[in-house]
Image (cartoon, rainbow, N blue to C red; front, top):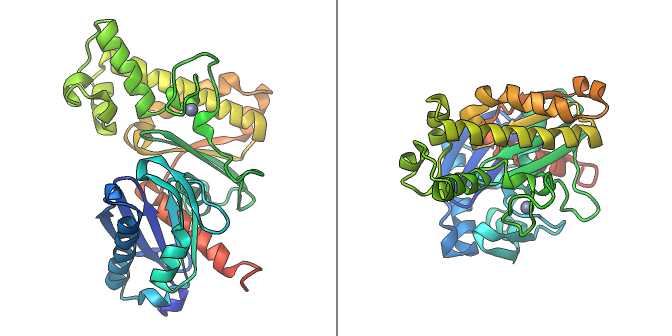
Length: 329
Ligand SMILES: [Zn+2]
C-alpha cells in the first residue's frame, strides 16, 4: 500500500508513549512502545514520541515523512494552535506540542486531549461503531471523559468541557485531587478508591488482602490487584468497588439525563480488569437515577472494546478528519 494512505497515532501518557501506524480505515499495521521519561522534561518526551512513531513506521515499512497525518493524544487540554495547556503529571504548562512534532516529523500533526481521543476512537472504530452519539468514561488513576456527537467532539465554548470526572455527585463529599469535594473522580477512580481503602484500614482498623497486594501503598494499587481481591470476595474490596460502580452509575445517569447519548462506553484500566464484573451494577445505578425513567432504555451502556489502542486510534481518526476536512481539502 502507498504510504500516502497511511496515518500515525501517538498516545502520550505520564509513564509510556504508544505509537501506531494505520491504513486509512484505522487498521493497525504496526505499533511501538517507549517509556515517556516525563521527569526529563518536554523536549525529551517529544524526542521519544518521534522515535517511537519512527519505530512503528519502520516496522510497517512506511516512511514517516510520507504519512498523510499524525494524531496525538495527550493528558492536557489542547488549544487550536496546538499548545498543550496544562498536564500536571507531565509537568507541562503551555508547551508547543503540535508545532514541535510538526517540525520534527514534517507532516500535518493534530493533537487532542487523550480522553477525547479515546472517546473518538471508541465512537469511530470501537464499541460505539455505527452510533450517532457517544459519551466515554475512562476509569484509571483518575476518571477521564469524552463526548462525541455526530462525529464531532463536544469541547464547549471554553474548549475544556467533558471533564466528567469533576462533575459533583456528592456536595460536601470526599476530597478530590482538583481541590473540590464530592467529584465523581473522588469515588470512581483508583485514586478515589485508594482514599477510602486508606481510611478504612488506618482509621477503622479493617483488614483487606489489598494491603498486601499493593505493599501497603493504596495509591499505587493496580487494577489486576483490585480484580484479584474482588474475585476472592474480599469484603472491603467488594464494598469499595461496588461504591465505585454505584457512583459511576450516577455519573452515567446524569449524562443520560442531560445529553441522552445513544451509547455510553466504560473503559480504562479498572474496566478492562473488572468490566464484566461491574457492568451490571453500573447499569442498575444508572437506571435508578436517570430521568425520565423511560429514557434510560434509549442508551446502550457498553464496555470499551479498543483497550490500550483507544487513544492512539482516536488520535488517528482526529488527524484523518483534520487532514481531509473541508479546510484542508
Ligand atoms: Zn475534582
